[in-house]
Length: 302
Length: 328
Image (cartoon, rainbow over all chains, first blue to last red; front, side):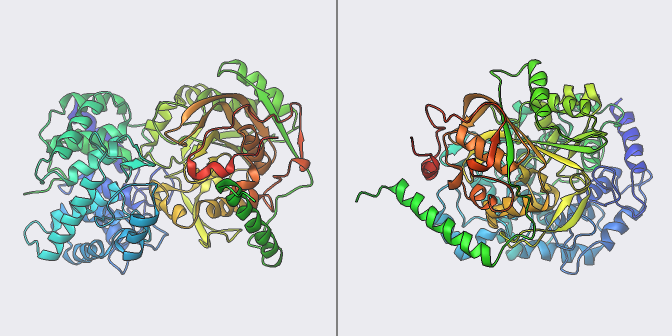
């Protein structure tokens, strides 16, 4: 039932493709790089009607600096570069585009990486508590590191360098991993980027937790990772929102946790997909429903 | 003479405000002004969220003789996170507002929000229990974090951002209603109708949270955004408000009020007074009072009930104690 459902959902997603080759979020004519990357992954490199125009659209949209903007029309490279690199990694092709994306990610860093802001967070800014020596990636240039863009960047870099990881890449990965572990909530899981504000612990969110765990899937199972996984397992039992449930399935699957019941619930929530207006959400849901049937797009080989 | 910390901060703020006013006179940072000679505010008493809220709100809106017939109305509630407690604008009030504007003849009513922390907007909408209201009335909900974006030159230059990408749904609306939850805020002091407009800034471009706005100054960005996208009306949810470490981790405070107004600065100034805070000490209200609306009580006509400060002011974090209004 799930397999048939995901095929119908794929058709629906395919029907929503823009003439440009991309996908918008909510049905406008403005192509979103996140939606397009996830749609390319969901429709699969192995065909099932996936037009090459989706990939070509992404390749055409790459900025000169190697990154991708959040949407077509903007010119500032952003966090979605990591998602595109993940999409291109699954195809084992497009070497030049992937290499320049990798270099963009290697250069990009949270603002706290600069000594001046590091000093500010250490001395003057008492509101939030984190170690500014451990930095990851921002959503957009000129801002500090946050969990989701850091986690996607880690997955993309780990995948890209799996066969040939030189020291600089390894160091950058370690720094990003340390940042994630430093920002984890007290009882496990992740909020957007901080674990406490004004001394009060923040509660974890589903999506950052699921995506951070994807980035840490090949790391040693530290207590933070174990607690976060336990939190996600417990929380996923009651999630009724498609996007969060889909990311939970994708994450729990790589930790070899049972996801069949969650997939059934996800399929029920989606129905025929008509009410899922957000194409990024629809694509993520298709990926989650196909867990185990296709190569997991965010898997990191040890 | 004894000068304690609060008085020192207050005096410093006063000097800064005076200097700022002088500078603003010669080199204005805004290219628009929405200030009118008088603003109108009404305080509606409601002790709980119930079906009665709609009738109360309708009576309140009729005081303003709003002309929304045939217009596209955007309701911008404050939906932040899927947390318990008075974090989000109450769904019953949002639903009541939708029905009221349709009864007043609006061609279309859209509820739009771009939550600042939680990326899964559906999770927030579910937690706020908004879905039944949207389903019943076939009202569009637009996730402003993922709407089509248009590059817009800002009509004020406090933040130095110059321009922002903003959602088309917001820009195409004829009548924007800010519907904040009355709360204290650990970075801005208070979060009311002006601060609520942070929710129109799209996460797909600026992230979750919209960190760029923090780096360019919260008060400054509030002023720039509200100069560029004017708020036409305010319905502030102060039935159950939040004090302390708001906007997420504070504690509930029963205020029993809905504040409606045709001027966002006047609305926020009134809310601040109801909270026992001095609106002139909130930077974006003090600065906004020069061009976004009226902060001075002398220029605000109360339609009905007068503003009575609370017996006990809203509790605030130590860094914001200077906001507490002096007792009479």
